[in-house]
Image (cartoon, rainbow, N blue to C red; front, side, top):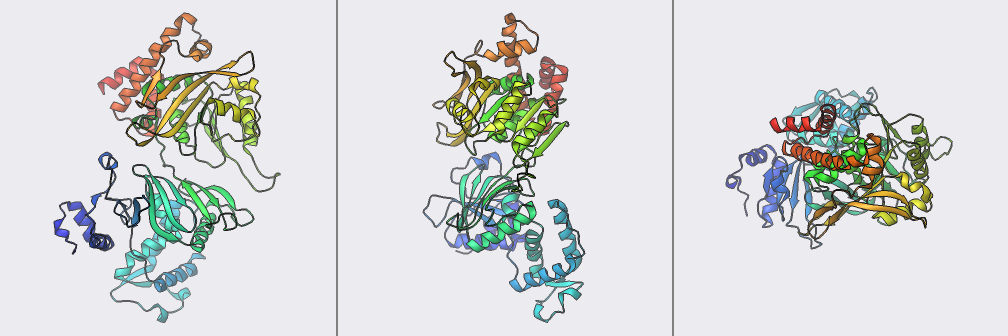
Length: 556
């Protein structure tokens, strides 16, 4: 089968094929195998994300394209995530360009920030490379230390720039993955294929085989960028990549049988807003309105769930409801929380392997209590810091944290046993426990849902923790059940008291709950999606009042 570009009706696609010969070459090979021509788009849209068997190419940079390929030759059940990028230049050219750069790099002061580093190397290439109309024999060129201009055959020039920038200013072969905003996780499982989790298309296989040596070389190179030593003596590392993504590494074949493995959790530069969370159906308007009221009242909340259930995304979305003039302190092992508040202190642990110079979550929580915050946010509670968090709640410092637990009983069991060991008498200091998970909806699609929001009431006579689920999710209908008026004990015991209202005013809180739900629904209708725009809108609403803000939304 001969690839016929004239058969393509999409003018944008045709233009890209004419501009990028490697994209055209890829499609020629793809069609020769008898596969149908993929769809093309510059960026994924909602209609593309609904495709059940996507055969789709989309661009992530001006030179890099992704093919979601369902027509694979393997029978393992995975669709493929194929990276289409400029061809690698000849090894001789790449090595010579490396030597020339090394000769000049002694006088350069490489910036830490990835964009600045990229711009520095890009400027160097533009000043050093010159186009040649004929191939160049690099074995006959003078000493790299004496070269001021490096000739490169015109057909290789753009390829060299692309791969040199990727190697010297980026993260090597990980660059395309990190540049794709549609990815959630990137998994290097050891020698073999990589796998990714795509926001629209689920788990996909990357049809590139990585050797043990290639993975080790990549990881050691990355360690220079994130500033943590990785070795056989210290094989397990958590770190943050230059783009803000979080990476977990287990180094060496002695403890990872298939060789070094690494998992990267991607985080958008701008987090998802609570309105964007609503669009995906994780919660409904009434649930979010309820949490809005609770956070404004300074309630303590644990966001619980398994790995990749969306806990951190939910937590960051909910921060829009913390009043803009409150002081917030965030404490994490690896920085990933982003808050819109001006009065925000962000702190992270430091593990030097030396107890005298290391800084633990426990240390930072104790320090936070002296910083007079209105809210303390903990990236994840796992150990002794749990005791300090509950002590903070007891002294009037509300805490929001993520925690690994699937339901109330396991939550209480984990908190009250080693290594956290929180006395059950402390448990009622935690006001709310939200549980979410990745589940199958009635259509069989994997989605994230809040399974329940629970109020912790106190201790029973026999010493058990009492709680009530104010909201819970019905798996059969993919809907939220809410008992309605009178279902919230915190409205009576906490919110009325904080507002100086009386028991007879309880009904007003439920009316307000409905009003806030309407505001959220209207914000979604008006497409107020950006994380910071939502924060500013909620702050404005707080200033002028709920009813007035709803009127403003109605006339926008």
